[in-house]
Image 1: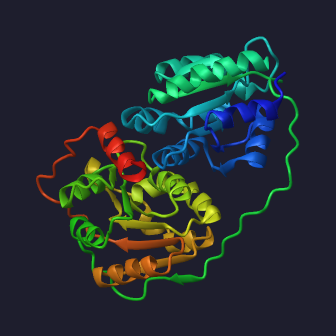
Image 2: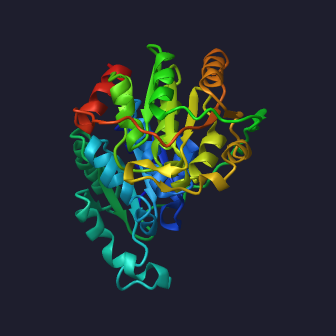
Length: 376
């Protein structure tokens, strides 16, 4: 077995000191070390953990994600449609529950047989983590060389690999909503393009804008292509988790997340994580047109969900229904003056910009430009 603290210290020597994940009994001792000794974000699901790690990487960190192999299935979307196209590397540790020949619970049987095949299909470098510290150190050097080439690397961890690491007392994360304003009048329903024009006009040199996948990112690109913009592709529902990771690592920047209703509904657990960690430099703007606009306008169920109430209940300090562009400008400026984790909800029309193009830069070029802006 590996001495967990000694192994964790080797990770830290290589610069890996930001962790996110979801617990697994095989990894509990490494998770305990991460909570005790490093910055750790407890995600609601494994895909969220990958997205938080991606945001931390944008901010200059070398992140680690920790998950059970059943949770690897939750992480597939961001691993293949966020980390791969944007070349956002992550060091992963995934447990091997259901290892062939070793008795385990029935739900792990199939996953134990296909874990490594899944990693290979996703073009992720991997190896079984050795249970000897000296050998494991050499493996970390190999893994780090992949990370430095913008390639993700996963260790597959078998049962009883890590020695016991006692979890220290944890401080409960509590953030309380202090301002909630629901709908009080008729919505003006501006277009998404008009709304993005206003938001973009209020940014400054310390503002980073993260636009969700689909027409939001494409329209922001047409409003203004700027080095402090990130235009998401794929990984639907992950944009606010990227914003969380970035805002935690770049506290001197304003991080504005531009999200759509379909995306938020897909990964609503992110609201709970954002509300708990509550970075005051994160502004979450939801533009709700009650439709999956990029795929033909199929309705979402957002009209039946009280998202302002939900964000408030999840711990967003401020959660406000915006009725028109005048109010939107007012509350963005207020957030800039007195930063608190804020959720601004605005209904927009289903109308999109005609002849809408796509960013001419590749996703990894957008990422590299943004990282130079943030860390250059």
